[in-house]
Image (cartoon, rainbow, N blue to C red; front, side):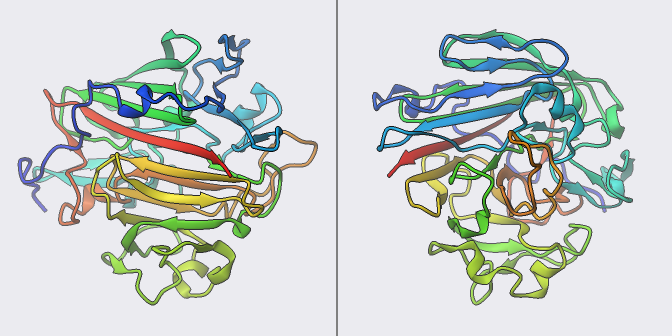
Length: 367
């Protein structure tokens, strides 16, 4: 199929050079971030955060609760070297293209572009040597933010063109971890950057299926056993995928074939917010209701992954994580979008002279 390069608007959030309003709020600051390790000691920021470059990885968010305790909200490993030995993409920056591309190829302007497969015959999360495995350069950092940069050569993992990317993590005054990804290319190329952070708002190795979740989306994308969409978007109405009103994840877990194919939830939801990062796209509650989290994003979709294959992943404790002990809410384009230009979202192909800019914020709210 020949793509019409100018048929869709470019993907960006409004005025990407303007600091989000959340940075100007003066509420109590609580969250602490770390952005990641291996290979040599991490650099320390004045608030106790850590920064390094492997995968531009988000390590930690320790949230002060109203009872005076502090709760870790993110999954992570006990020490930096373990991040190199896990395959769950814990907190890592994903690219060039997050999620899956069917058969590791797509068609652009009548030409087939072949990519390196990384999950069977498909490409997952940018290929076998994706951005999560690269050492990003630290451009600058202070006690409230860190900016990483990465370059990717023409042909890297099969993708066309030279790409320059940045990842910025910011800590706001109202307990948000704000993540901004930017990229430019010198040849047309699909770009879909996200962070693969996992959450457990109960702060321990417990079953996240007892969390309550709301996703403001009217449709979701069914997939086959390989995570590849074979049909189009489907209404959530009357299905286990209807999270428009908050519900406990366990209440309809494995209730239908779409879930059973992939051992739970691992599906993209097309958001009602349509790229408006000022409006919440999702809302998550801990089982004990002492901590909530809201998700804001300029991306068109969220991939809800219920941690179906987390078992054996190194944790901060003596025992590894088990399945369903963390969940991901990944902001992104719909999976396999390069092969589906008909889907109702902005074009995932970035063109020379344009800038990809994606903003996602996770706001932690002690009850």
